Length: 48
Image (cartoon, rainbow, N blue to C red; front, side, top):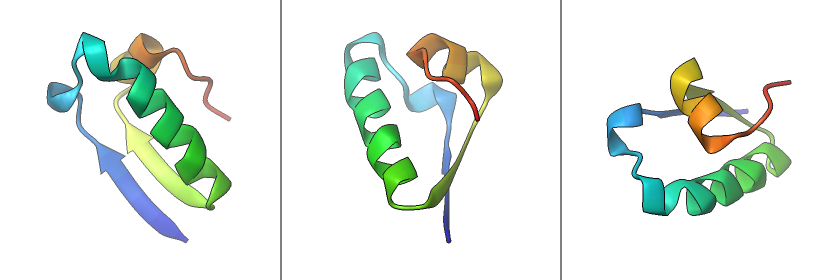
């Protein structure tokens, strides 16, 4: 299983849709993605 960390300082309002899409694809490829809770809320994805 791959592990990926995404740091909030790289997130920008205009890229949130793209990042959410990429996160979904990573999840489908059995990757663990780590993010700060504040940024998970900003993107609007649900943690499982």
